[in-house]
Length: 281
View 1 (tube, rainbow, N blue to C red):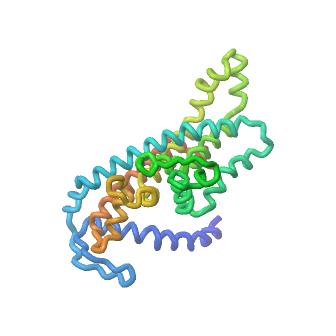
View 2: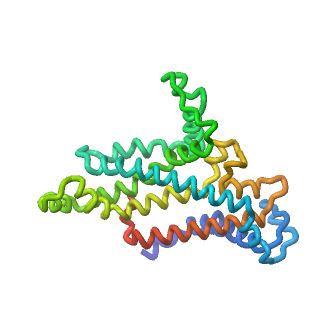
View 3: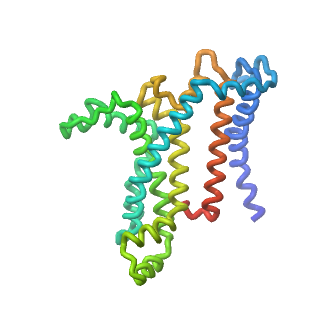
């Protein structure tokens, strides 16, 4: 196995350049007074370490966007669970010879550009969409931007809820269902006493896999609301700090650091809930 370690060197170099260095700069900016930075020449101006940047964590704009993100992501996650669990359950219990062909229906949209998918779903929920021109009815949620963000999140991240739940259900010992039937439990009681408890790992993983990108992403609110500040989410707020005419590296880095800590904490929870990786396809 030692000879194969050399094959990991390119990946290690890639991780250091495109993951390690950005994280290092983010840490430096979060605890410094950097006013300008050039990514091409690595020139940094007015660099001094400070702890004053913690004050940005109680900024009203950040707090409002942060809790709005959690609220929208929580609703989208619940909707994804309510839609995804029945789909995963139906596929796992079906008698189709090749169930992966059905899963392919949900996988195929993920092969396209994410921005294109978001824009397409957004257009379907707007005036003069495909529904209007072809089916002669309109689902216009342009005036309900919060609801529109939630629905787009749900449809975009739904596959991330379906896959881990399906994997757990598919690996479940079928003799458990037979034993439940032999003991006189009906299909409903079997579901709540056997199926649902044994699929908890898939549910936990699916919730994390949907909630995290939904809460921390910036593309969906940016496309759906056209950067309306009244519906700003934390990811979009952080992006503005770096793309502003006068970038606020300290503010954006401090906020990003908090988000990364939350993400790492969530991944740790997943690793403890699913230590054997059963929810992975």
